[in-house]
Image (cartoon, rainbow, N blue to C red; front, top):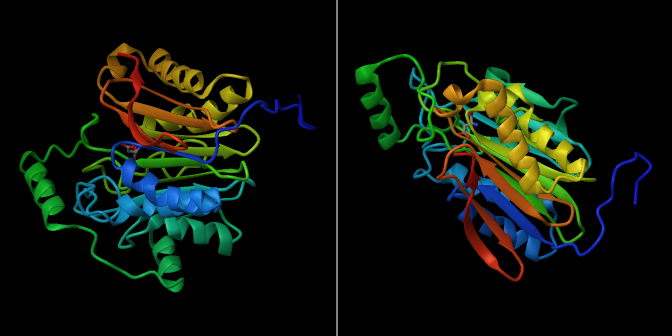
Length: 305
Ligand code: ASP
């Protein structure tokens, strides 16, 4: 069956609600999202509530409060959110605010813009009632000071120093939304912005097709408009699994094995039918799923290597 736009409408049994998110910290995040989804709430509210959990967790050193700082000691946060009607909001290089995802939502709802960055984003957050806080915890400060000893002033790109949370949810009404939030690559150059706040790169949702989100080296994800690519592949009837695989393989093909061997990138995707999948370059990327009747689970993503 085809819609007015020539887009395939997926028929058959739809598994809903369902929520997926990146990494192990996706488990408690999904639980928060599930509370909303299982009560018949909107995917959009669920993804915001979900990713706020790791944002506030000082133990998660790659998102929000407790996130590792840049090479100059600043915790700078990137986040974006997208609903089922192509509305989206984003913040980049935002300092001092524990919940950048909620600021991104406010950008979407209260301004004519999609993206605010830096000082302006902070001012906007404060004007909208967010509290200015110190996000650099003692232990993240220690890790930074340790890093400073070698002081290479060259962010190391690997899969140990960055773990964004990206989340996609499908609600009871069959609508999709997504959220993505991160402190980005640890000890990055000051001013660096990754893929996570960029609609189409770190996150994309098309309510006719599905949603996708990315983690890993943002520069490589930006180069292929990664999440948008995954969604467009699903539009062409790729399963979420196949779409994630093709996006990762495209990066490997274009950048070559020499680059691919040194970096981690993972995509997760969920389609309108409630089917999900994931693929990454190296093993050790997991994603969390909450669905009915299975409940909560953590899945080891398939990998290129
Ligand atoms: N994609 C994020 C960034 O490049 C980091 C990560 O997910 O690991 O900022």
